[in-house]
Length: 301
Ligand SMILES: [Fe+2]
Image (cartoon, rainbow, N blue to C red):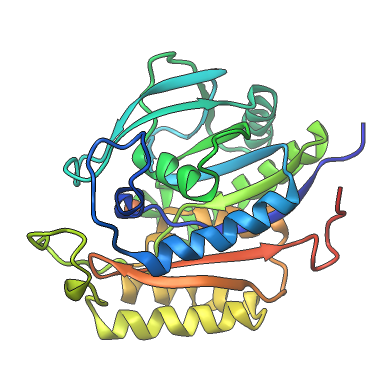
């Protein structure tokens, strides 16, 4: 078996509003659209993902919170209804997904090998969180690629920030090793918003885009500064600024997916492709891609 490899990583945020705006049959609430820049950004990302033909999609979600260690979906077939606890009016989604158990177990074993507390989630009735579902739906609405779902231990919130992010760095290295050993051709999805300052009241019509704009100007400036660095391939500089960005922009990347993904890819200083940026209830969201095949760091099929 050839060594597995990571084909690409995507920054793939999960506001449930994007699913609501799209009106897929799986989601009960219906809208008149909205958040088109971000939804169309995802359409561009879908096209590049399709070209890569990965065996598996790995997603780290801030909204599957596990206080004791890092957990991995460990049931072959999961189905049920995922509801956003903050926006149940927008997101009540009937999901059905297949898990790549062999890779998930390898990720869990490698994480333990790296000294992390890690566990497989074996509850057959588990209700998958809306972050995982939204990211997966937006990047691949066909649901025809197996997934590995990874919880957020949220160690950066409980430990010191640098200690927590160091754990995510280790989780990334463990993930890469598991992919290599299992021979998978994998795509990583970091389910994170950037600036997370948000409005506290929803407009009467949630999809009324005349009400949508950045909640905080300084937060917007931070988003543009980070995106600009990432677009120019200045990954190292972006990571140097990350702690300050997290603190000043209340950035959701604190929950670790972004660090996990870049660690797994080896923090490549290659230009990220921005598919689009937009706000959702005032928070900053970018859909971005780091294509390791195009950069010559992974082999095409
Ligand atoms: Fe979130």
